[in-house]
Image 1 (tube, helix red, strand yellow):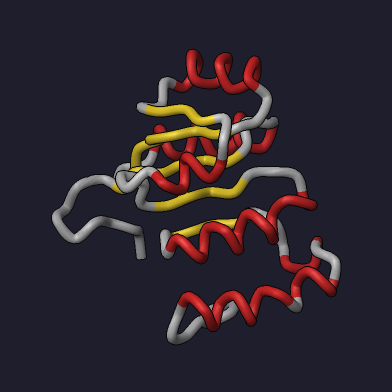
Image 2 (image 1 turned 180 degrees about the vertical axis):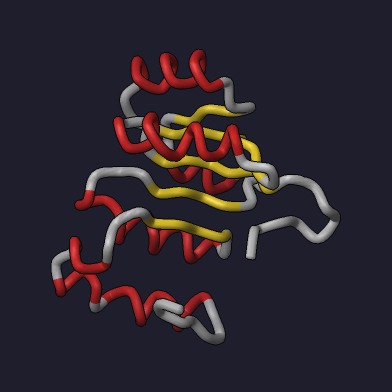
Length: 132
């Protein structure tokens, strides 16, 4: 079931990370989606961020993930960073209660990091279901 805001407007998506995966998959997917817009991108590498902003033309670009998360107009976040940053970025996002997608399999994370997720999920949601 596709994401759609209640008032029928398109979902504003922020993408964390401007590396190859974001460039070859997530930016294009957001641009081509019928129900979403590439609203914001975020990367710590300023030169990469500027190049991707010029190429994909999101409404906003951020060098700081916390600033992007603070944007009240973002409806969903795609985490497209290297493996080591997925769990911490996911936890931050969950605390902000915005829809989130992490493109890494749970098997890609060290067990000690994965053990933190249920604790964080209990803080931010009444229920959470893994898988389908």
